[in-house]
Amino acid sequence: MAKHLFLGLLLLLVTRAAVATEEPVVMPSEYTLDTLPEPNNPAVTLREVPANNYAVIRFSGLAGEDKVAAKAAELKAWLEGRGIEPLGNPELARYNPLWTLPFLRRNEVMIPYQ
Image (cartoon, rainbow, N blue to C red; front, side):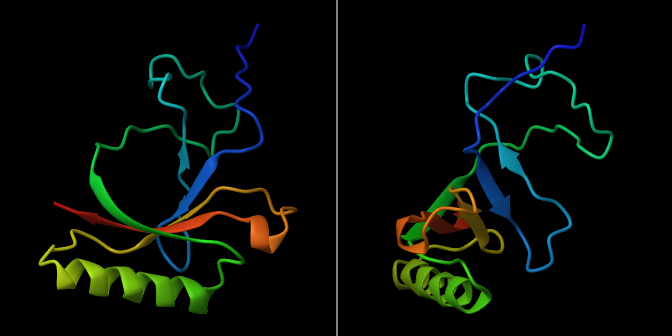
């Protein structure tokens, strides 16, 4: 019998590029690669991503391209003002299902740094 794991409808979805070739989903910290069941879809792969430090700016509303770019620029300027060197490109984290009213949505732009 296949082992199924229900994690709920609310998972963190991270977009790493304007045209997403992958859509990482962050699993709850109590799970490891060894304790997660095998995906039943062959297009889904599991891999561990090493821990990293991120600078984050949080915002509500729709996460459209212009708004995300503005928030990324704001966060980059904040990092530069403090002499912090980014290690990669901005990532967008969305926390809510599509049916959430825009003013209630939680979004974050994240930039890795050392």
